[in-house]
Length: 84
Image 1 (cartoon, rainbow, N blue to C red):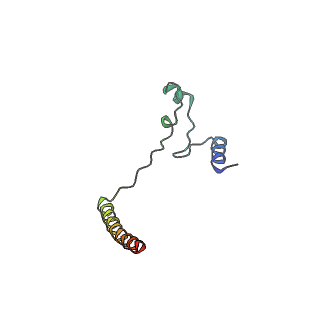
Image 2 (cartoon, one colour; image 1 turned 60 degrees about the horizontal axis):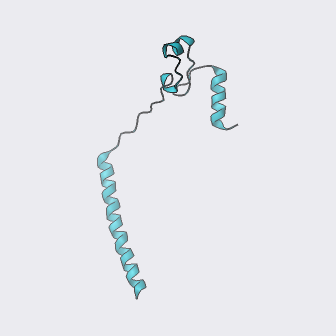
Image 3 (cartoon, rainbow, N blue to C red; image 1 turned 90 degrees about the horizontal axis):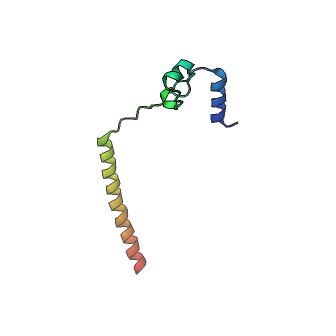
């Protein structure tokens, strides 16, 4: 059985809450949600995104652009040799 299916079966068999994965809702809880069984009403799956270092990204872009200029110069030289 694939691992994801195994995890589902184990979660159902255990009938326990699993953080960010499973929740055993009571009838009252389901009723309070107007019998809406959308997962986000019962399981918080939100994951905080990693903060992006804008300065580091800008430095990487500048380095890549510099590398591109060098590669284009080499490519132009090779193409010039091939033309001869």
